[in-house]
Image 1 (cartoon, rainbow, N blue to C red):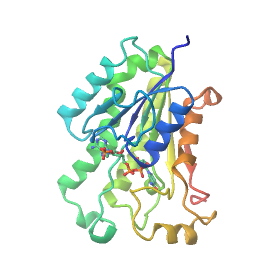
Image 2 (image 1 turned 180 degrees about the vertical axis):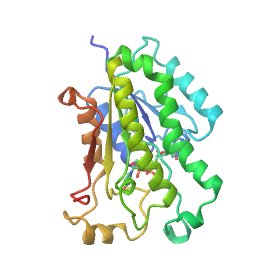
Image 3 (image 1 turned 90 degrees about the vertical axis):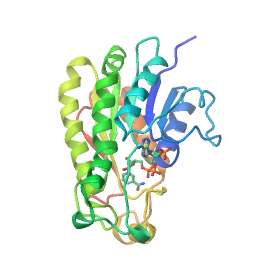
Image 4 (image 1 turned 135 degrees about the vertical axis):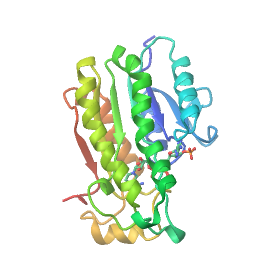
Amino acid sequence: MAVPQTLVLTGASRGIGHATARAFAENGWRVITVSRQAFSPRCPWASGPQDHVQCDLGDAASLAEGIAAIRDRLPAGRLDALVNNAAISPKGAGGTRLGVLDSDRDAWLGVFSVNIFAVALLARGLIDLLSAAQGAIVNVTSIAGSRVHPYAGAAYACSKAALLTLTREMAAEFAPRGVRVNAISPGEIDTAILSPGSAAFAEREVPMRRLGRPEEVADGIRFLCGPQASYVNGTELHINGGQHV
Ligand SMILES: NC(=O)c1ccc[n+]([C@@H]2O[C@H](COP(=O)([O-])OP(=O)(O)OC[C@H]3O[C@@H](n4cnc5c(N)ncnc54)[C@H](OP(=O)(O)O)[C@@H]3O)[C@@H](O)[C@H]2O)c1
């Protein structure tokens, strides 16, 4: 029997991550999920509970334990894909954006710990396994990384701009090891991270006049991890209904 390809996916418990885990599992992949909360019984894939690593990516000790727990689950020494999807986007009261003046040092550190530092450290902890499989990394950035957004805070936006730069750095550094690295940049996708008013904003500002669906982002992630993208490296794919034009 063929050995299934394996994906490590952060932030799989809801939203884009949940749809991504589902899309890969339905296509025969083994999916190792990583998030703070325990595996949700709502998640439909078979190996879910055994392949869930409970880890706070923003905490250095928890992250180190999480990397060890992921490696324990991969005794064959190979990993086909790593998708860095987990992120935090702190908001003010009523979902308002937190500007520079609203964000203290701890706020910046909290956001960067999850959205940037964990991405670099996970890759560092798993690169030999990815290289053995000639695998791929996909980092989930955001339209907020390239423009001021009415709901995304300053620290979040800066972290997503940095994540695109990190994608570029990784793409150059890891390609000689056989690992491709790309980014997916969603626009307004219908998930819990959105603020009230996002649907109306999308109807006004997005050329396609609607929110995106998590499954539409998952399809892009599958493309970047798959053989059709075998010569795609260091790029950012926009999935936003034309919002970036
Ligand atoms: N939705 C959008 O419109 C949109 C737009 C642009 C970009 N994005 C990006 O797309 C990605 C997914 O967004 P989403 O809307 O699906 O987000 P979401 O619904 O808020 O889900 C975030 C996921 O990250 C996990 N997570 C958060 N903090 C974590 C931590 N410290 N350690 C481990 N896991 C953590 C959460 O699980 P636990 O709570 O169990 O930890 C959850 O599974 C993010 O990178 C986001 O920036 C989304």
